[in-house]
Image (cartoon, rainbow, N blue to C red; front, side, top):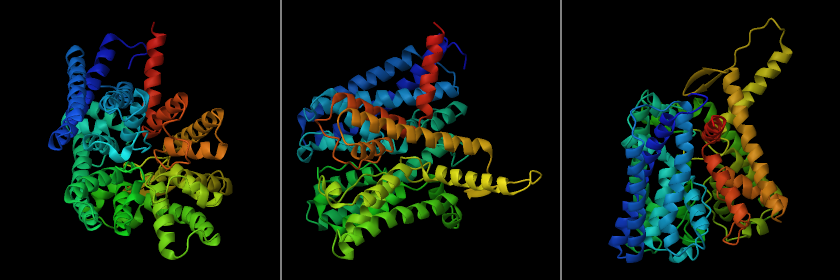
Length: 500
């Protein structure tokens, strides 16, 4: 990439951006078909217009910016960062036309929360939202969890070095298979397979809970898409509490844990390498993190006797802890009850779990447990260096899919991302305080947004100031892309400005 971008560089970014937007436009035919099946004619017109405009924009960019060049690293990062912003912008249009959102900014907030699997909603009267709009909300979450560029790589973009640069820009650091095209297709195929099995199981559970077959299937599909992609959207304003079903809650625990695991681990297990489940440093650290956060939660809840009986403690405490640690955002508590019922120490356990998140190369958000493992290994290595003589040769090794030697580049990368997350958490909290909210609640909300978690202290609502909505949109966007693509876009913009 040249210091001063040329017209060809802009065309290359425009071409790949048009490809991604074309994919988003094609995806709108699913809620369009849903509206037709259920004879929702106003939503049908909304998605017909949305699909037409998005496809027109995508095809126009592909025609005007046509190129056979593959993107470089900075091109790829800029394409990914812009793709997520533009995808949310065009996807918000049919939501805004529905009349269920107070403004286009609210609809954009909804779309960004869907794609980034953050899970906050500003929909008015969510319980009576049209089937088509609910389908689109959850479909965006499903696409965003896998990665909208990953989906484009699977179908629309050819493989190559440029494809890997796009893949890496979406916060994925690992190639499961040698070819990035096959890696993308593996992620998509595994997700689709789990979706078939999970939707069938959830449908049967919901039917037994009293829903009609049609509603049981739709709710089962939507809950799987948002659960596996650790997003937290539900078709009801009461989240999982609406269903009052311990069977559903137990099934969803398995779904969201599957979504929080590294796709590389899915591949290892499907390939017969089950030993990876207990040898992997990431899973070991995840188990320890669950234990530590769980101790804070359950010790406090039990000591204060917040819930009577193990059943209530499991349904509230365990479910919310797993939901927080996988950054899903499902809740079995009524609105506002978390801050009324839970002691600050238990809320701190959820705060830690949300900030850390689950596995890399998964649908989960947050810092990621693998980076926490690396930082811990680097600290242990530095302590050994202090204790050993200068002439000693020290090599720290860990197992993650394969044996890897720890080096300064890996440690610095993990530490940098961790610092960026921490800075974002506190910048978002400062913004909340500036708008008059208490610091602890503002910090909880900021961590939930930047880690794409979706559990709320009660700050986020339709009455949220517009400035804070924008702050949270940027936090969710940057956190989902793990900052790399955002920094790449800023670097590209800076090089353009310097070139004038």
